[in-house]
Length: 569
Ligand code: TPU
Ligand code: MG
Image (tube, rainbow, N blue to C red; front, side):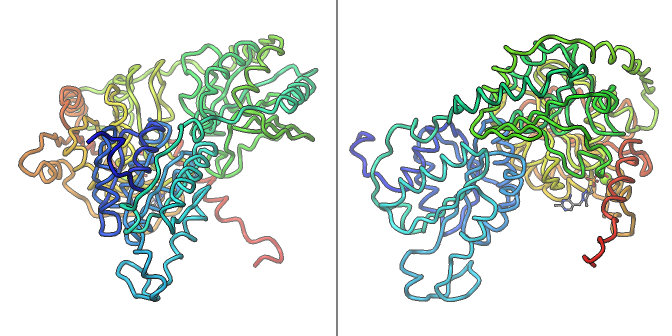
C-alpha cells in the first residue's frame, strides 16, 4: 500500500511535520496515554525513536538535541511524565531553544463523564491543569480536543516555537493519536522566517549611526542569544571586521565569536573573566550588545553591569538609549550596519597594551597526584576543530571558560537555567545529532548524581562521549556561595558504575584517574573507544577549586544576601 493510500492519522500528521522541519530523532518515555502516538512516530521512515531513562533526562536530552539541530521533540505521558519534563522545557525556554514537548492525554470521553483517572491529581474530569501549567513555560501551548483541530493546532504550536526560539506544548488525547486526519500542506507555511520591516531596519541603521557618531572607543559585546537567534554569527564577524574594534564575549556565548580572531579580547565576566575583556568593556564609550544576557551570574552578582548607554541588538528588535525598533532581524541589522560603519582600531591598540602575557603552564609528572590545573591542561590539549565541550554547573563552568577554543571547537553551557545534571542527557542528545564531532563533558560529582542513568542510553545507542567526572567530594560551588553540611554528598564508585550500565552487552569504559599519568592514559582510551562512552573519574582534593569560582561565589553570596529594601520586609 502506498503512503498516499494509507489511512492518515493525527499521529501521522505530527510525525510528518516533525520530519519535515528537520527532526531526525525523537526522545521518548512511553506511558499508556502516548503509546498509540509512539507507534505512529515509529512508523515514519525519517524518525528514529530514542528511549530515555526518565522524563527529566528525556527533556534535557531534547534540550541538547535542539542545540545541535535547531529544534527537538520530547514525547511523554500525562502528568507523571510531563511534569518531570517541564524542567528541561524550562531550560529550553530560558536558553532560547525550540523544544516541542508532546504529551499524551486522557481519553476525550473521560472529562464529560467526570472520571477519576490514573496519573492525574484525582479530581474527576478536571485534567486541564497540565495544559495550564505548560502555558507558563512555553511560547505556545495547545491541547487538541478534536481530531479536526489537530493540523491547525500542531502547525500553530510548531511555528510559534520556531519563530520565538522557545519551547511549545502539544497535548494529544490517547484516543486521538490514531484518529483519522488530513495530510499536511507545504512545510514553508510553518518554517518560513519573518523578515525585517524595511522602514524599521532603515530607521534602526540611522539611529545606530547617531549612537556611534563621535565615539572613539566602541566595543562589541556578544551574548548567548546571538547563536540562538539563528544564523547571525557570520554577520557579526563581518561587522566586527568592518569596525576593527575589540570584541568581548559573555561566558554563556563562549565560542560564538572565534577565539583565534585577532579582535577577540576575552570573556567578559567581571573579575573572573579572561584576557582584557573586563578592562576593555569598562573603558568603552559605546557598547554594541548582541544577544546579551545580563543576569546575576553573568554580571558576577551585579558587579559587572556595564554602566554606559547601550545599543542592544536582539533576535527581532534593536534598542538604543531613547529609541526602539521592532521587527528588525539581528542578522539583517548587523549586515546592514557593517556596510555603514567606518574602521577605528583604537580599542585594538589599547588591547595590545592591556593584553595579559601568555601564562606558563606547568606540566605535571606522570606520578603527580591529579590537580584541577592539570585536568585543564590535558583537556585543553584535546580540544580540536571537531570537539564540542559541555561544561556543567559547578567549578566546571570556570574551568571551561578559562580554556582557549581553537577554530571550529564548540562550547555548550546552560548558565541561565543552571540545572545540575543537565550536561549528561544534553550531551547525549547533542552527540546523536553530531556523530562526526567529539563530545567531551566536564561534570562535577554532585551534578553527575542527578542524571547518571542517562549514561546507560549512551551505552545502548553506542554514543562515544568522553565524560570527565571531577570528583571533589561535594557541592563545591555551593560551598563557595554558602557552606553547610548539606554540601557534602555520598561518594560513589563512579568508574565501576559503567559495568552496571554495560549490563553484559555494552562496551563502555569506566576508568579512575588519581594521577596525571592515569588521566593521560584514560583520555587515550576514551579517544579510541568509538562504540560507547568513556567515563573517567578524576579525583582531586576537596579544596582544589578555581580562584575564579571563589571570587564569583563571594559576589553572588553578597547579591543573594541583600537585605529587603525598606517597606519590603
Ligand atoms: O565543581 P562542583 O563540586 O561545584 O560541582 P558539583 O559536584 O557538580 O556540585 C554542584 C553543586 C550545585 C548545587 C547543589 N550547584 N548548584 N546547585 C543547586 C542546584 C540544585 N538543584 C538543581 C537541579 N540545580 C542546581 N543548580
Ligand atoms: Mg563536586
